[in-house]
Length: 107
Image (cartoon, rainbow, N blue to C red; front, top):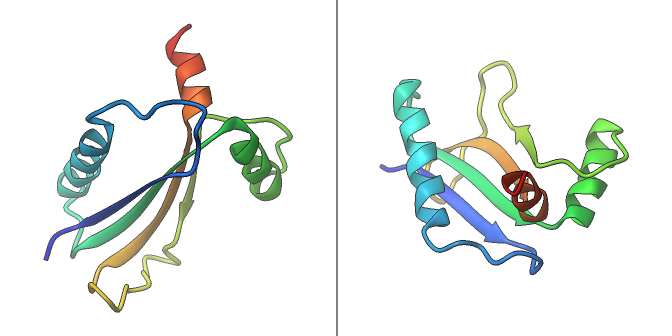
């Protein structure tokens, strides 16, 4: 069984470059292989705008500002929930502000 990398675009501020989804999937799979991760994994990657990542950063990290990336690991003491539909271990969520990423790329 293969890994599942779920990619969602919840923003309209920045056009998602062509090929980015493939690059993210390949990168996630390469990291899992490098780390010798046991079993198929499920990772969620979501593109958001600065306003949404600002909300999440305040809610979960008590930081009143936008950031570039937030990650939400799901494992507890090395134990993973299993997606009953595909048998994958649910690793967690990665949230990326496309606006912030573009701002940083222009520096």
